[in-house]
Length: 597
Ligand code: ADP
Ligand code: MG
Image (cartoon, rainbow, N blue to C red; front, side):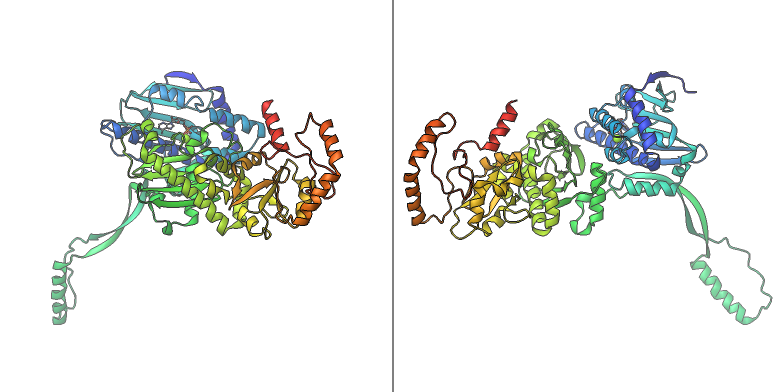
């Protein structure tokens, strides 16, 4: 029926559409969330453009989203006054999969099959329109082009024509969903209202629903001709007089009900971060997090604060329940994790280097009144205020972790399981925060099955214990039977077990804690603190006694070892190979070898 040039969908788009339709048929309703989120993005874009270009808004100054359901035509129309799409945009944005992430996602879903949760989490975008529609018409007007109509029936192609009606939108995009027979419920106003409230509660633009409601109204009653009263006596006359007087001042009214159809505002749009934390429930934070990040599960922790002083801003930071598996390796993707707003206007989520690598798992937003609105993103990145904000955000994130550790050990252990390596990386790479971060470290140790902090270790140190002992290696099961460790345990000392590859780097960064040196049990420099005169003497005696053996070994092994000495570190093992105090440990050597390959 529609004329115009036909274009083929990219193969991936076809695949994605099939996938969406087949795997999400049980949660069709997400289509509305996706389309409203696109409308909101488009509104963000034009609002951002208008900050530097005062003509960008033109005559279409109201930034809003409207929803109209037409039961007769069986269409649902979603209109926004956002940035709109040019012919080129329509062709490429609604015909290909622009983001490389989507293609990767497709591949991963295809390999796993039927992972609906993953799809929901990902945000399937525009093509979810086909969950409830068998024909989708998109009318769009961008400032840079004429108004066009895009249309598709989700088969392999779509068509685009110039809109014969000319420019009817002013600016923006109108999506007309020709609703399938099995999805007619989405034409019900109550259903739409409920969905907007559930999914789009946190959209920062007004969403209006074309809705009818019954109104009751008091209308004046027409003056009826006075009825003749059969008993026309005096009393009645008097009453009649008072009645008349009342009538003159207060006309008689009656209540009528009528149905009116009008725009109904369905969302609050007061950004959650501008509200007082005391007034916000945990549920609201969780819902906000899920709609803000498109994560499928609630966050592990959050911190909502207002920074005052040098720079004022509001912020909410979130720790996702599970990290992206590649979070410490991935390039600089994580810069999108923090969204910047200025006076509630979304500015960017591309602040390169805003978060240090070790904090790359953190998500959230910052809203500042102090930043200029009309600067480019590039200038913003260098802005001195951004640098101050960055510092405060990092400090607040650390506060959040500390609070978790202090108040909810179980949750902190979960946090540690997911993000322990990130904290360790922070100790290594963030000297300014190293002290605070070291207190957040947790290790296994010879003390018990439970993880311990360095503070707890120190609190258990024996009187006169001069050092904090640790052992490194890949097989923690063997630690307690290591000849180095067994003697320390025998003397009642505790040994920390460092078994993560990153722990090797960590021990180079953490030389001491609370004034105590961290000492590798397999390196020279180990002190017990209870070596007394006697054992000193006996060591001397033993050195004398074993001198021939020592000299012999030293000569025979000269190609491999620097020195051979008599030691009191061992209890049952006859000998052990040690790394020099400043040399690399055995485990580190393995890491270095692995990296060289
Ligand atoms: P995403 O929103 O994640 O980019 P979508 O599939 O939802 O992916 O949308 C694809 C693209 O189509 C968007 O990035 C945007 O460029 C364009 N688009 C979709 N809806 C609109 C709209 N209402 N106004 C302007 N552009 C839109
Ligand atoms: Mg989208």
